[in-house]
Length: 402
Image 1 (cartoon, rainbow, N blue to C red):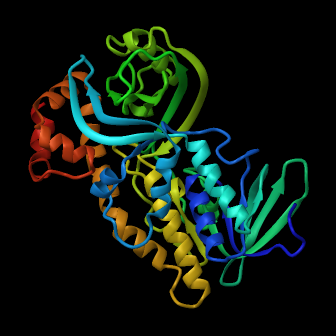
Image 2 (image 1 turned 120 degrees about the horizontal axis):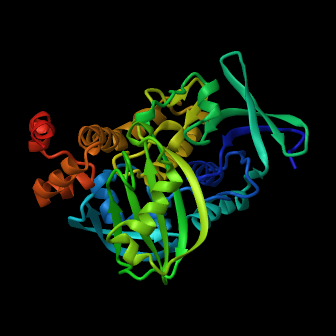
């Protein structure tokens, strides 16, 4: 139930990875915290492939600065499988492999563990409760108007409001921070959880091609013991007339020359769909006493669709900054300064690589040629959100001659 004295240090909208990380941190530091989640439970629908780079790889991509990585260290406890390579398969079957240590996690268990720990440390969790609007007045946002399913509206007043409510964030929209996404800046995905996988389980496979993943990529991510996440993404400008997201995924499973052999005995256990923002981070991720974290802030390394590690790191940064702000030791704007100092470079690099790929992805022959001519060292750097000097200098020439 919502307390009658519904005033909090921090009100968090959304109990996904970002919101869970904020709640864990603020509750641990003694703040009166409430989490608002519109679903019946945190991570009621897992909306990602659950692929998590190993810590060594994370620190190659995101520099280890400050004490903001403790929750990422915990994620390995929830792994169901370890992978050692990424396989990139071209439209016509040419394969490149990159050594890349990672593990596949049970995201639902991981996020629910963070939320559960936050509740154990005093946070309140309001399920089946949606954010109706922000109550704006004075020098900022006084609170969040919420409505529980089948119940009345209530105002949760708070010193700080956190929007962790995804790419279509209602908090961002009302807090003057929302950026509408163009068709190139949003990937729509569909994923099946499947059983009876026949391939090696230490390889994460990514497939490109207009027939299966127009403007994005398809994937096979092994969860272990024959279970896999199989999905694809699309962007509308690349989708051919008459094609659909569901049709692209079905075609990938049934007709792809390599993937179909690995999936011929696989059966569908579950299905999810999601939107992934791939337009880079928002220009502003704080406004007065409101912060945005995770997908709501566009904190995604977009060329590979990696949102979970940045979301969790940003959640810890937000939680620590809120605490110091309420103690009078730092301005709330430090949140944006800190997360950008740590993660802005890989996020910007990912966007650069995505835009470079946009000039190639519409043509399967160009995509094939690119994967064949790029040097192994360059490919490895780009997977890790680093831009080789040669690529940056000669990108216009590369895209013209392909």
